Each structure stands twice: as structure tokens, then as C-alpha cells.
Image (cartoon, rainbow over all chains, first blue to last red; front, side, top):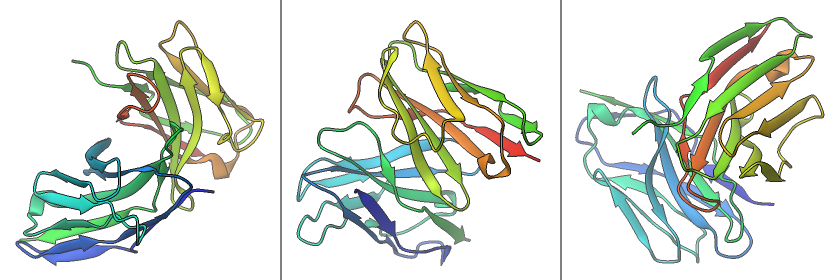
Length: 112
Length: 113
């Protein structure tokens, strides 16, 4: 079956540090890939997505590139802010499906 | 416009009781999903509705769990004879149709004592 594996957290960084959160997946076919973010006390929000190999999703300074050869979709940001503190979830959706399959989530804390 | 809403926001119940959780999707969204977020299991898919029918309910963990959707809008997730392992945050999401971006509600935190 499908699965998503994220790097274990929690991750603690200082403001303006570089962020990478690793995500790898197992799926049949060509899934769509997503990063969702959950800010403290709020619901899940879509951060970015990519629907085919070599696509790059980007939003709010975050980027992730769909790498089919390494089955990865790592999240990066060049300079994190305190306001980026949240839980980040990598997810996939099968080509023909509707359900999302999520990774375990990575708690990010950015200190001033 | 209004997003996905869920009620109650918190529910505390005793083991063995039945509970009903409600989801109001975004108006016009034909697809509706239930997920569960728990410490041990992460975020798990439970069931997917397209209109009033459920083409995928493979994520329901046992026959104590059921869900329905009426009028292509509101959905209710029912858990019968609750157990402590049912304690989790139950999330609802909706999308214009299956396969489109899913918008999530704030969740219902269920605690079974």
C-alpha cells in the first residue's frame, strides 16, 4: 500500500536558519504530493503541492520538488521565521484516488 | 466565505457511550472526507463521500464506526460503544469534487474516559 515517511522531529532552529524536512514515499503509479501545515490551535492548511515528476511547489518561501527517481518531496526554506513554528505533514494522493495518505508530521519550533 | 465547520469542538465521554460528530462542508463541495489524528497512529483516513454515497470507507477501523451524509451536505460520524483507543482529533475535509484540493475543518477532540 501507499505510505509516506517523514524525518522525525521535533526540529528546533534559530530564526533565519535554513530548513529541510525530509519526506519519502511509496506508491503505485504517479501520485500527487503535498505539504500541509498545522499552526498552533488551527486546522490543517495546504502549503504547497506538486502533481508530476520534477514539478516544484512553492508558497510563502517554502519549496519542494517532486523527485520520482528518489521518491522524495523534501520541504525547504532558506530563512525560517518564528511564525513558521508549526507541525508540517507530507502527504500523497494516488492518481486515481481521493484519499490523502499522510506522514507522521514534523514539529518545527523557530526561536528568535 | 465560510470554511469547513465541525461540532462539537471538544467531546468528553465515558467508555461504552455512543458519540456523534458533525461536519458542515464548504457550500458547493461535493466531496467530503473524515480523518483521525491520534498520537500513536498519526493522521489516518477514515471515509470519503461523493455526494451522499461513500465509495471509499476502507479506513473505518471497526464496525463501531459509521458515517452518513445527507442532502449532499452535512455529515455525521458516529462511534458506538466508545473505547479509550478512540480518543483522538477527528478531522473533516471537503473539496469541490474528489481529487481536488481538500480544505480541513478545525477538528473535534474526542476524549474517552
